[in-house]
Image 1 (tube, rainbow, N blue to C red):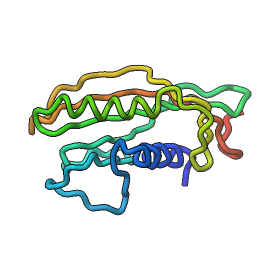
Image 2: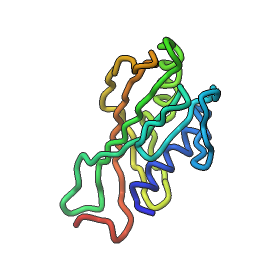
Image 3: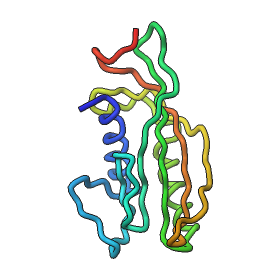
Length: 148
């Protein structure tokens, strides 16, 4: 598994353990599910309505140190016409991630998480509100994956 997979799956599992949603990669979600599904592979599923999708994107690599800043986007989707429920989920994720420090996720060590931006995305065709919160994870990469 890559250090990026370790990061995303680790964050997904930690959010699940904190009660923000349910991370279960083996689960087959249905339209009838009411839990908040957490997905760590970047693909937005059609169901269930309530979902958090984690995606990574590079920000900066240190030239001579084993440090990188990796963007982690949490894309939220709520139940139809339920912006309040979506905000509750976003706030719970924020409470867990904001200023989280010294957290190992597999081979990747997160020095700290900080939210860098939030973007309202409107509603999808099914009237489900969407939002994206972008966090910066300052990381120490494992041996063999360092850029120096």
